[in-house]
Image (cartoon, rainbow, N blue to C red; front, side):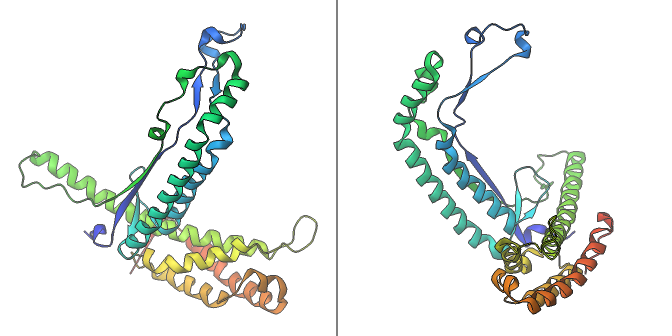
Length: 290
């Protein structure tokens, strides 16, 4: 069995952000014909806009991690190739700093937000709904994890339990392999499809405009593909190389302004799209790698 954890490790990012909501006590709800079990309500403890900068950092961190990692069949965990662990850790440190800064700004405004809530909530305002130390409601952490086959020599596991857990581990590794290969193929296929759509016309009959993200997403994918292609999917690698050669140093501005370049890219990427569609149409279990 190929040991996946010789190629990298798992990363688990955890975050907590104060939800700033509370259920309204049934006795405070207006009388209604509905049965109590059919009627419930919550109140916002502060203006939700105040928490958006904090949640934005968390969402950006998760988006970044999804773009540089591979899926793994354990909830909340993704796989990061060995060569990228240092870069990922450094980037997560940056997100943590941004998270901390956003929390500090929120804490500095906390008293004003409570006073504003008291005005808007009226009789529903309750001082005990608001934590005294609000900073404890926020956290941003991550950990790197390596799994291994359970050790049957320690005597902690009965032989039948050890064999069962060993089989589970092997199945998890195989599922991780299939998920990693399929994920890269689907990600690249999605990029190709979105680019192809830019060459079509809109409902008004006019050509669609090339957005910066349409091309920039390709360049971001190219930067990490070699490290993330840990199972050496040669078929996909060849198509990625073809796309890289076609796009070269192409920028969104050049595609918008250079008709000849646009035709060349459209023609070349149409072939890549056809080949990619054929790959994605195959059953996942029939993936064959070198």
